[in-house]
Length: 218
Image: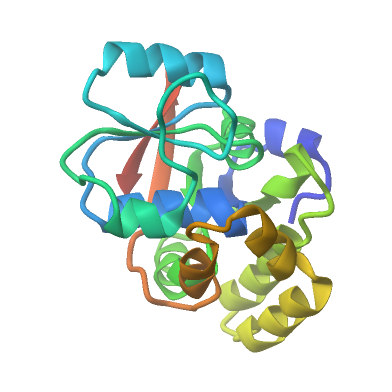
């Protein structure tokens, strides 16, 4: 598990990004919903440029951006948007974490919701692996990323650490923090975020010309 952003930037094996409350579940939900064109951007400038070129695209972000866009909400990604439209994602921590892995041979996105599917894929396709908690790139107080990353280490080794991880996340106070800043969809988002194994999608990101093109690895 990465403990410093520099580890991700120099990693050449498989990188797995975890931004539990937002980016990871939203990207997984977009893929799970059947979207065929999902793109991740490291910064708002690139995302807004792409939005101007793709007139029918949906932008997902928790950032304060000068255009109409969806919140970075897995519930909205799954139930409240049109899966036929391209989807663009730019976030405070998840998309920068993913884009830090430019040297990696493979970039995957993980959350509790896709733990079993992702672990099965990794065991079937073994590679040296670095798990990257996205909080390293934005706010270390977002401890849910570290907790989920530690649980994924256990999951990849065939042990179920989810119950203990869930208890630790609730004890951290981060659930209440999230709800306070997400009054519209927060409760419905958390019902998806804090539930294990309900998504089968394993998003894989391939960066090309500043855009992270997302496909389902399974």
